[in-house]
Length: 163
Image 1 (cartoon, helix red, strand yellow):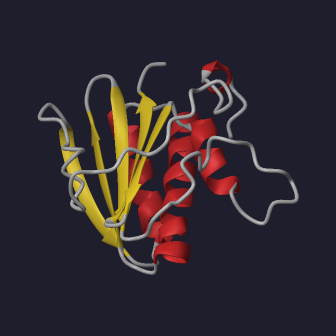
Image 2 (image 1 turned 60 degrees about the vertical axis):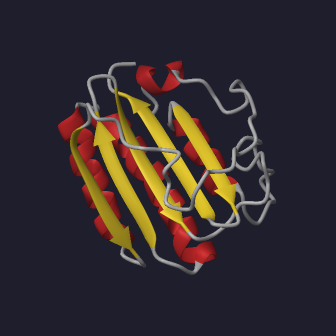
């Protein structure tokens, strides 16, 4: 995580309210349409190539107007979520990115499920074998939404362009 003033102003996961996932109405992410005012939305399907995901996210983050430090934070967050798809979902994942004048949003979907309603909201112990990735995601993003049910998981990562 970048150690600049921008990062220090963000709420930590401990300060954010812990909300359990809300079931989607359909496995296609229809509960989360991309806004009509979005600039240059893109979609990318991946199986294992996380380097390509990181490059795409960085390019869009800079294009949207994030500072380099915040763009790196967003790349880290998306990479962690995408790595969870590769490791746990055992299915292809999809990434959608769009931005408007206020924020950039990265949405990752896969066929896996997250059973813990507070996944990523509690700081894991240093001895924990897992759970650090989603916690880091919650630390570096301005807002994280996790929706998971039997049809799959959608994680939406928000970063304000001008915090």
